[in-house]
Image (cartoon, rainbow, N blue to C red):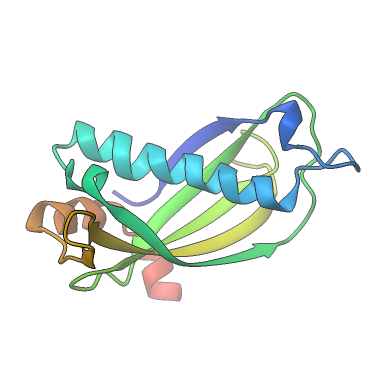
Length: 145
C-alpha cells in the first residue's frame, strides 16, 4: 500500500475569530485522522493492541496556509516511517478540502509509542503491528525523504 486517506468534516466549532480553522483544532483534526488509521483500520485488520495504550510522544506541525470554512470536509493523507522496536512516526498532509487537488494547508509528524497502561511503561511493537505499519509506508516518500 502507501498512504491512508480520510475525509474529516469541519465543524463550526473548529473556527477561530477570523473564520479560519483554529491552530489547536487542527491538531484535533489530525488526531481524528490518526484514530481512523490506527484504531479503526487497525481493528479491521486484526491489530487491536493499540486500544490498550498508544501515546503521542512528540508532535510537529507546520502551517502552510489557512483553512477557511466553506461547509466542506478536509482530506488528510497519512503514511508511516521509522518503525523502531517501540515507536514509529506518522506523517500527515492536511488539505484545505476533500479533493486530491486541494492544496496542502498543514504538514505534521507524530512520534507514537505503544504503551502498557497497566504497567505504566512503553512496550515493543508486535509483529502484527509492524506488518500493519509497513503496509502504510509511502515508498515514494521513503525514497525522496
